[in-house]
Length: 336
Image 1 (spheres, rainbow, N blue to C red):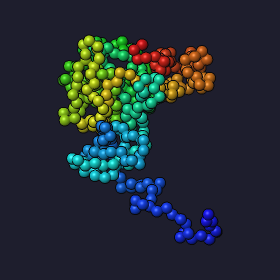
Image 2 (cartoon, one colour; image 1 turned 120 degrees about the vertical axis):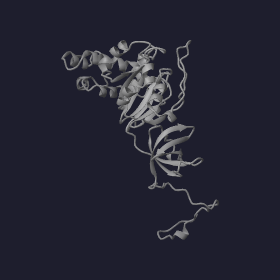
Image 3 (cartoon, rainbow, N blue to C red; image 1 turned 180 degrees about the horizontal axis):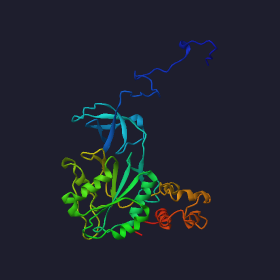
Image 4 (spheres, one colour; image 1 turned 60 degrees about the horizontal axis):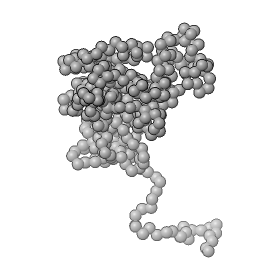
């Protein structure tokens, strides 16, 4: 066995020959300083459509990103052919840090998180007042997900020509969630569009809702003709809508700095990923009262300090009731 002394030359080191004749593998990755920033507007079977300046560019994820996945709303760094012409393909080499991430799980027992959208400012929860009937538990779950992600919630109630909104608005009045009520006639005439647009201007808003509530119809009324999607009808037997939106898509609001992100209709909104301790941040009038709570307090137990906080007049009792109702959604199914 050959032994090396203290003064060996490089020529003395035995090297394994490279039979393929290519360069040896290295852990050093290019910095891609020439990469251009874009925004992901759609994702379809491994192909991502990105807005780069004023043109749409088709791209794929670079291998060096590994398992990191870009979603609608992501700001990404892109290299390659950025012309946007047909049959061209660019590469996404970097996903920029996200300001917010809206997640959900298939159900409360599923540990696998699904990122719905990234970098949104607001979550518009679209609910029909009838046909199909409203599902308060699903609304509660969407609110919890919004608070957990740091998004501002917006309640959009559709089909007010079929049922009054009073009962639902009373249920969420203590939360102080802004809302817009629309009807079919107002959407067709454009009267409701201006009211909704005021809530969206200057923000990136993700629209979520049960299938058949009129979410895509509302988005179509907000955007230009060439960017509209097809809509479906509610099944008269099951009371469920048909999925007409199969993937999320970001659409700019005409004449505005805002964006709307239309997402597929959901029938469940799992909250396995939500830490209940983060939901309290959405209740600034209650949060100081948690200082006296026992460690790992669920805020719905006999020793919770929030009961005394409310009893001393620091907050409205209805606010505490609303907080506990939202936190309890992780223990109940949407249909309860």
